[in-house]
Image 1 (cartoon, one colour):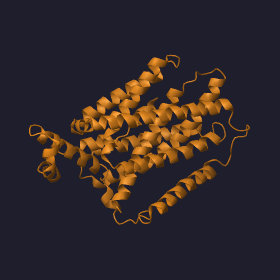
Image 2 (cartoon, one colour):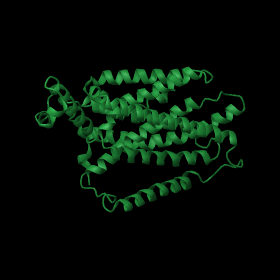
Image 3 (cartoon, rainbow, N blue to C red):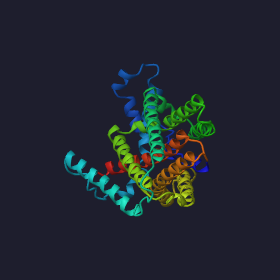
Length: 341
């Protein structure tokens, strides 16, 4: 259970902490532009416009904290037509799946393949995971259109972080401790957990939709390939990774808190902590996806033997957290690549 507490994405909290206290030139330019009179009334234009400009610029700058150190690195995917880029992207994803299967899955199952009850349990878990991610996306879009993202960015970051953790952890542990036969309470708490994730992640919609779509596609490809390896590998082959992954998760979590406590003058330390959070976190959550897949199959076998109850909703929360943490890092990586073009 403790591992779930450490899986919260910390990029949002870092972005909120960087909210400027003074109006920037970009905000003043927007405030004085003719378009302002068409969007806001004379009475409420100043605070709303200032908040909008601050929020958008602050959140986008949160993904540029160490991009200056990567300037000048060539980007081979920057050139070419759209078809060539799609071909290169498809080849990279396909090659990644094949390479992961060859590297991690040399010893496949020796029991004649996945039994029907394991396949059914895994399919139901991934179905709930997909539905949960869909709820998060729809809820985040609705909250963003209602102006929630602007108010969130203007609020005290510690209040946002504390309130988000309390609501998320409360609904998550409530879901875990609710019996699967209590459908109404179980799915109500599960839906509340997904809405809590949407409320915290809604400022991501300040970014370009194309970038978010690419990050989602890459996240699905990465998790899909890793889950395939875990599902076709020998039984319980990767369950020993639980301890090392928990240690790596703790390191990533500590590095995620670094921008909140270290001064801006510690540039080198902040740069390395950011790299650990970004690339180390990507590797750690990829490993956790592999571990969670084999853990789900292990729970399916225990459920079949009557040693544990079947609970695909609880299993899906683990995969949702893996998806969100990988997705956030993909967004940041793609955003840095886009600015280097």
